[in-house]
Length: 170
Image (cartoon, rainbow, N blue to C red; front, side, top):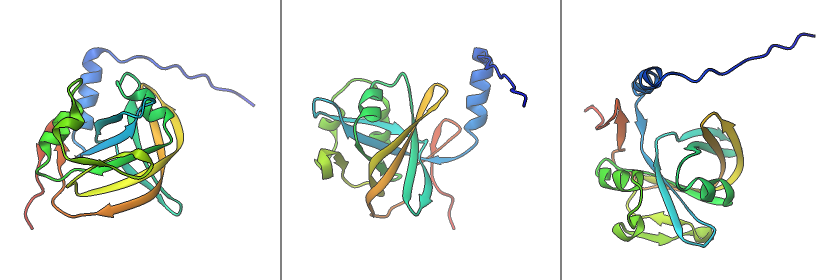
């Protein structure tokens, strides 16, 4: 039996930017993920790394940068909620993408199951129990078991090549 060794070479800043720009050709929806921190305070962040995994059991995933301010809350708390944003919610995406500020003081929300903050007026939401954290380079992938979900409709907020986009007409 032979064992191959692999090494990871850190890309140059130019290669990282080129990779990011190339990945940006894949259009994604925009979500806000929420949880509570260890003190019971609401925590939230914008993410476009959301994906379905399985219908049986119902599983979804998303990833968080290990340098994110909310990293500890999201990787240690048992529950989180994923909110799919509507096309008219760019301000919500921008708010939760930024650092600082009282994010929850600037939007309509309520305390949902397990004390998890629920945003109002989103296109859809999923209440999840964290089932696994998977190391993935400079990110951690969070696998969540879907416990509750609802769809409210509306056009989705899309992100493509560093800009918000709208769906093309029929």
